Image (cartoon, rainbow, N blue to C red):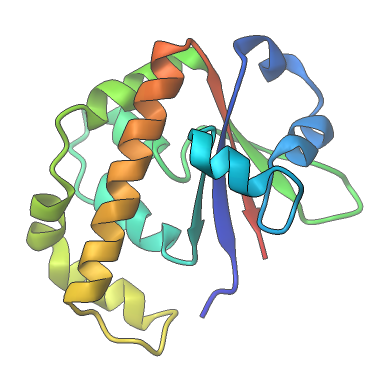
Length: 167
């Protein structure tokens, strides 16, 4: 198991120019004040460990012209938060957020998962003792739908997206 969770956080476009440390500290991670409220209102999406499967699902089968596919999970600019730590922050500008939202509009996660099931199962074996099964596929489809809705809301609001890994 990776023991690492990934968070996507919508921020106003003006916040994009803030210092990385400030943006990093604004993300309401598990256990932080405001975490549950942020999840409920849709300003944050949190995925425990299976963000690796989302990367494979969204970017692994993309054609060369689908740049936005690579932005969903690990794409965009990644920057150190503090030289004293390994913390990094991923940033997507509003135009990148719009591109991701357009790519994910009309996405059918269950169909995508069915096409890539063997590859997803192989990736899962690399970090988890739990086997690939229908429950895992349904769980992953739920995360994919949540991310698609998250990016659509961010794009419609003209927002940027901050991504962090916490372990």
